[in-house]
Length: 359
Image (cartoon, rainbow, N blue to C red):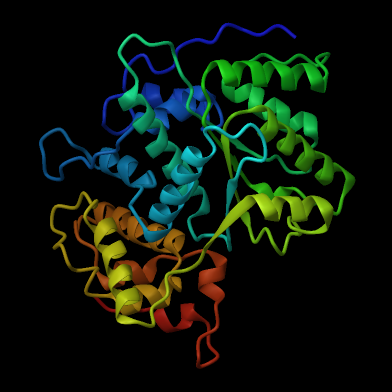
């Protein structure tokens, strides 16, 4: 299998603004699981259009709100600290490198945490990189496809680093080409998302697990997995699972708890971070942080649901011209099925209790 010459993808930092039309079209062709898409993610910093500014139309602000603005959370901080420590511990290891698994229920920020880790690590590497030094690719990010096979996973690696894969190329050729390229580009961190798509109870799943283990042995890099309830999915079952369990630290992601004063303070801080990004002309900062109980009850502390709720209400406030979020805006937003149908202590659904909230 011929290895294509690697083309530089970080010749300049992308400007820190919302996507232009050309960038948005390019994003469709180059998702996060390609080096080009990853490079844009690393260097892109969405900035809210200034509401009321001449030339700033509603569509620009709605486009901004359609992006998932990344805010720092305790989980992101813990994942970043743990993984970067593992990267340093693994530097001189020739085998049996330690890794990290981020696991939890959907909507608790697993993908957000590992992609934030990747961005932080890559920017740190590039800050240390002398001007004019050979091109590097510090981070690889892939997702495990449904019903994955070892070849499918190897092709995901090849696609990220920009290697062409023909149908006639066998698995060994693809893997060797990926490893040679990744070592040459000094890959230090490999992020593998949707790891729950691997079932060690099946032959195909066991073979995919072995393939990832082989990559981890060949590449001088730290592997970080993310997936939904990986322990219940059987990732630590059997001989293969026990080996994974002995080499990987796990960090669980959960909904934001609300029982103690410290937990409530963390929840309010998260709300404040999201509120600070709103491009609304009439919105008064502190309006949402004054509703922590309501917002926690609506979302059950799920960061994904909270982000959807606030951004959706902000879009409605732009469309109706009010330029500020009210409780009526929040009450009108339908959330994900899990949030909408979660029972309350009265036995009614959450939706029944929050519908019709007044401003």
